[in-house]
Length: 430
Image (cartoon, rainbow, N blue to C red; front, side, top):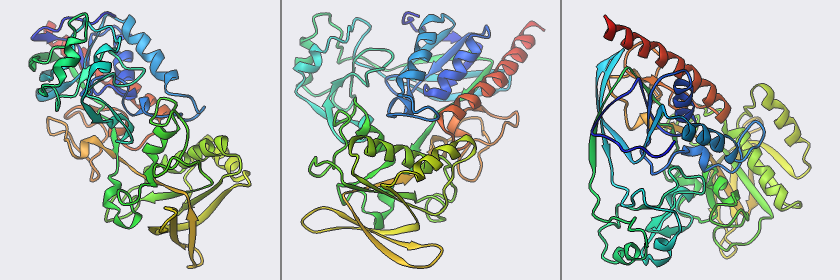
């Protein structure tokens, strides 16, 4: 599918909001069933959280597995229109007939871009790399990630007005960098809306006793995925952020803020297995390294129990039944001391490690950015089971899910959207 010229007014059978694995799945299932679909993504490219993952369950696949296949299907399907840097500003109507107002933010790089990188080389302005959770920097004109679609550079809007950016624009032989691009708003009429805006990690800075933001060697599980990735800030080499030294002893802190009435009262279901998966990253690079996982209860549902059993067989991986209450830094070495209480015996323990990984929970983006049309939400901000009112939730906006489960959920959401779109079509004929 070539990039389409986007008109100011459009119509389609289904609008899918969110271009992560759930949004892409819902869009593809609906389009391959014969419907026209607009896939709207707020970021500069598709892929969502999965694109930032090193490996995911159940087969420990790299993200290129699922995302590359989906992108090929999207590119080949003329029934899907992709909008990036797109913000749904308003949605009106009801089941069977909606009108959406979508703001298209400027990319400051047009379709002439060949992704040659000359603008990036010439650019003198840097920005924190949000894709890598601020662990490194990129230039202010950058390629979002190696699997980005569209495969085109983008200028950070915070820096588009910086006079130094003119040098980057001048370096492009194709005139692709346009620093004076303006936002546009389009109107879209659709029969159904699927909301798949995904999740974000719980803010670990709120866990003041665990030292995130105060001690450099305390990272989150999401940051650990980027550290382990070959496209990450260290080229996949797992090292301590403070001094780039290899790892000898790593502590994983489960339920960091989860199952806690002051933070996230619920269990995110995937964190235990994610930590065990990340333990395999460390053990693969450092065969003599020790892993210490501190947990309340281990959640390994269904066939994932086999992964847990295999982890227990590792002689260098130690499970501690205890909740970590505080993390402090050892003066001089920058090692960390994890203080925990055994939830069975009440015993207090102190374990010194090189680096601590906080298994923070999943927060649906709908908790802070509520979907339109008074869509029902539960007490945690997840979209409630489909009641026929509001938008149709898909993926992790409905509950914490792993990647495979998100795909299944998004397929079901697509089926519900097909029914709603069919109702709209029938109403139009009558």
